[in-house]
Length: 68
Image (cartoon, rainbow, N blue to C red; front, side):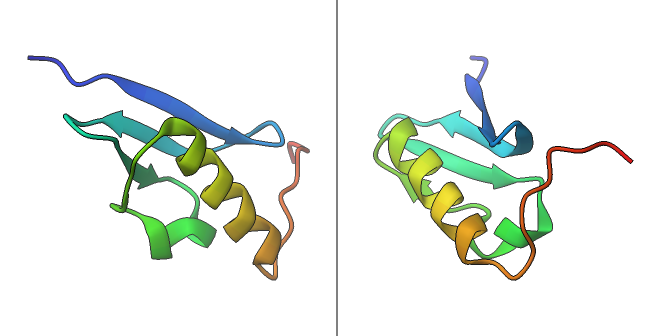
């Protein structure tokens, strides 16, 4: 059985993926600012996005949508 995953993007920046579980979603962080919630489980995809956005907004380092 193949797992279904969803890209989690905040303000145009890829910050992780949400993997569908039997009940809810597991967040896999790719952004170091979200390391604290890496591996956490959430009831819905909207919950994953909401928590990721909230954590990023609370971080010391803003999300930048600019390539260097």
